[in-house]
Image (tube, rainbow over all chains, first blue to last red; front, side, top):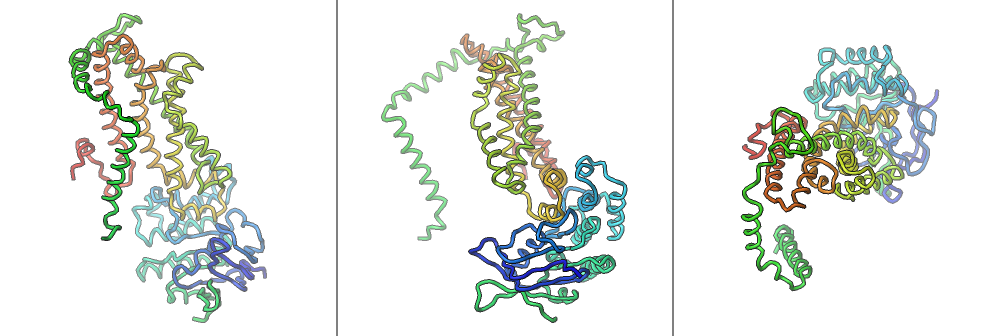
Length: 229
Length: 288
């Protein structure tokens, strides 16, 4: 089976003078749920941004969905730490942003969306139990509801790989459980690979595999190792 | 002494001293022009400027005007409405043309090789003040409101474009990152992320620019680009300063009214957790 994420001798950071982390060897298969833990500022988000092709690696090999190039439109879903929602716009508008990946740019720009795209938006909103909030602006929703909108946006996109950056932080335990369950169920039932950056070890334990980025005494940068938790 | 704590007084003192020294250097010891300045001002004010000549709100004999109410045929009304129309059209055109240029000049959307030339273009457009653009367009298309509209449009593109790309670059990275990771094209990101996220700023800037253009309507009119400035310039030529002051008072009242409406309208578009917009009185006097 092809690796969804393959990295070898990968060095990441913002410049060759300031390397943040090194990933010697990493293979993540289709449908795996993986968590990455580590202290603040160690390079977790930078690694996620490299996978999302938002940043370029400094050196080494990084293949996403078996390709060196940027993933195809809609193949990778990314949920940033602050979710990246359009706060003044409605739930529908935000979820539609994900769904337009399934139609041509011309249709997306003109606003003449295909029926299947609108169906995907409504299904994703329903799956996240947000149907009664469909026309509410994001700024009027609670933290948990906003996170569910971010997941709905990714679900409507229909990606093969989801990257989530500490998206459960600042939530109470009950909401974490609900949001996590919703995400897991969706990833499990659709064989989607899920990579979650977490600083909370309890939450990280919920994944199939866990990796840790930590500083190496001999090196100036951190290294990624698989851990059993 | 902790210099860090005293940095603001030190900075203020530095500015004062530097300003004084440069001013002294500029004047080069010739302070004589200041000697009679107050007397001159007083003479000019009472002999030429005051009281205002309110004939400017009466119908003018030329060109022929067939409106029923005298005021509608007056230089004040004709001038101010033309200035408002010039400012309105120029602000609208400047906004529509400036926005695409501003997105191309934004470094969080496009690479430096694209953004920098567009920044230079916007910078060049606002380097020339609207009066210079007005002189240029008066030569190009002749006297009248068209040259006024073109002059203000060009300046508006440069000025508003800068405000717009600064607003775009001030956007949080997260919505942009999410959209880029999805594989959306820049045109889609602009439509679905940039414009909705900056809409409040853009609308607020639009109102500000309209207000600014009305104020500058008096300046560009002086070189023949239409509006109230045309009448001000004519009265200046004939040394009718009492009419000039009357027109300036009218312009001031109009600008204050636009300012009030503009602040009121802008308050609806600026982020406010309570969604409460200030009253007209609060707009001016900031009552807490």
